[in-house]
Image (cartoon, rainbow, N blue to C red; front, side, top):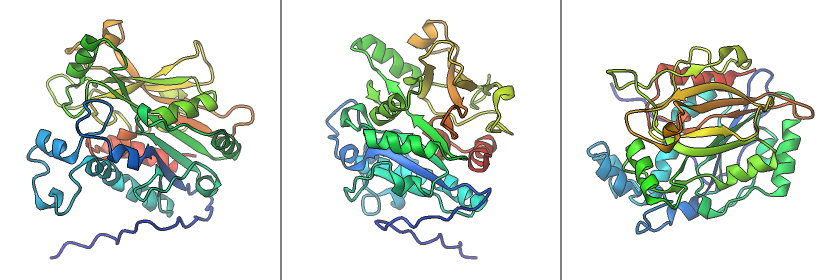
Length: 339
């Protein structure tokens, strides 16, 4: 029996607005990078760039050694790795479409064709949940504009909206080379350089919205003893009014997760819903300071004029690059079908 054909793919076409359907959320992903900037970073640069596909193939050999990933079929530079990120969210997109009846829209700040798309009514008008995936390097200089902040604030005044912010890690943010090496040995990922700092756009957006969170470090999750499975989350289910943690015990095992530090002491505007235990066998400055867990899931409930929710969770938990367990898929369903 032949394998069923995958749906045809489209590219470089204008977005078709989705009609509002009561109880069925319309989701959109917004990649904060300039694809052009990231894809054209020189492989001679050691830090603050994505790996080339050639480097991915070398480190993960023989995972990508069939013709599908060869030069005749797939980009071998940094662009190939960016496309891996795009492809890795297809399962999440499919699930979202099945649950909501709406296609999940995917936008980029600057796409492969060089088209710049800020966050404005073209994205927000038919979006109920906006997932902002913060994978732009600090050096790219992507900053939210005042008009974007105004548009997002106005959008969040609409009942039922949800802004999911996913600023990625900040590895090696020091001039101390010994600390950079300690961080590198802690996470153990050969594809991450000694310094890899994300996300300028996300940080400027958080500042614009007066959100008291800072993405820092790149921490390796602990594993359950004598297994390769990620250690279960420490959860605060009594605070989980959105049901994000229903049937969720763990998220994806990603070797360098950001810690979402709450920068406003004793803030009652934001709740930690889950923390991830950290690998303790390999030293890291964060654990040396006495920390054993990182903040991995935060929630800011509606307040004052803001009727929408704000959630923090890393974008890697929506991809299949690092596995998609039943628990992770439950998390996807919870995000897609939340109130």
